[in-house]
Length: 114
Length: 111
Image (cartoon, rainbow over all chains, first blue to last red; front, side, top):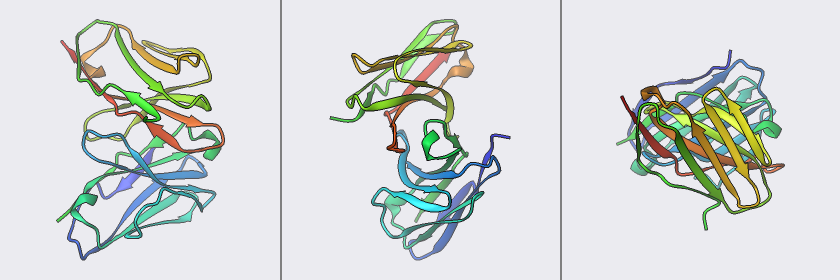
C-alpha cells in the first residue's frame, strides 16, 4: 500500500476560523512533509517532520501550525488565515529524510479562504 | 538564479511522438534528480529518480542526468493521451533533505 490520504478534500474557511488538515500514511514511513501549491506553480515545502519531530520549517507564518501526533499522522492547524493562503495543501511521506528523493504524495486539500 | 529552471510550456504533441522534457540546475552539490507527474487536481506522483549522472529507464520513460552541464531530461516514447499532465523535475541534495521543484511543464498529447 503506497497511499497517503488527506482529509478533507475541500475546505472553505473564513479569516477568523480555526480548522485542521489531516494526513495519514500506513507505509511505516518516518518522514512526513507539508507543501503548499498555488495554481500553475510547483509545490513549495512548508514543514518536514522526521521521527515525529519538526526537522524543517521553511519560515512559514505562525498562522500555520503543524503537529505530528504519531508516526502515521500529520496535522496542519490553521488559524486567522488570509485570502492569499488559498491553495492546494499537499502532504507527502518518505521512508526517512535520507530518502526524501522518494516521496509519496497525497491528493491534497484544496483550501479557499474567504 | 533559480536553483532549478524548467520551461512551463505548454508542450503539445501528437499521439505516438517522442517527448523530451528538460531542466537545468545551478548547484553541483545536488545528487538526486527526480521526475514527478501531476494530473490536474491531483497530487504529484513520482515517476523515477536518478542518483548522480547517467540514464534510467522504466517502460516508456527514460530519465537522463548530465552533471557536467547540469542538465536533466525525461524522454517519453510512444506518447499517449493519458500522458497529458504536468511534469515536474525536482532535485534534493544529499544531507539537505529539502526537495526543490522546477516550475513544471504542461504536456498535452493529442489523439
